[in-house]
Length: 212
Image 1 (spheres, one colour):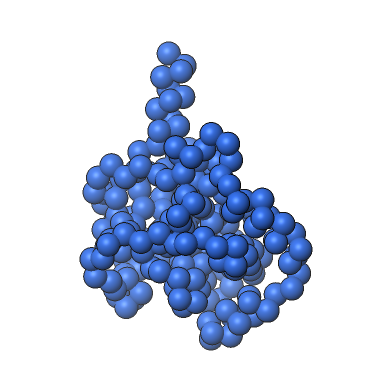
Image 2 (cartoon, one colour; image 1 turned 45 degrees about the vertical axis):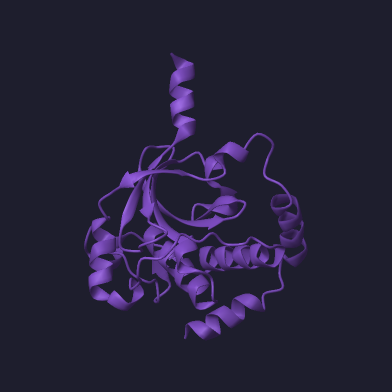
């Protein structure tokens, strides 16, 4: 099933010119002054989200992995274009639906194989498509943030040699993590997919200090 989906994504032609232009403007250099914020700071171990634990219990093969050395993706222009295509395809194809409406429970992480899902389900599908395309699992990290309204939200972080980029169903653009406006709390460890790590947000610390 997903081999056909990935083939369809690769064959997409709409927006090719704009995607290429975006790749040229984004990959060549990080925004001025952002170098020190290219990567989120990891501050220690954290508890896994309950939804992730239950998802892994239902589909253990999807969470399988051994402890490995952290690996960042080499973000070539070709890789960026493919990343944009996957992000756009999933965001445009999957229709938003809360777990309560979908499954009758408050929280359930699952693949949106019926075409409906909430933020975690968008993340899981993007992650699976990229892994099945040969991208390193340790660079595709399920991440928990708080949005501008201080509500919990899930995004996919792609760790690259040019920084940590965020795939988000609430934003069509793929942004450097420090440009999202989110507060970052925890994500999967790069070395162990079952062990999340807590995150430090230097931007928030700077803003707090400045306001005193």
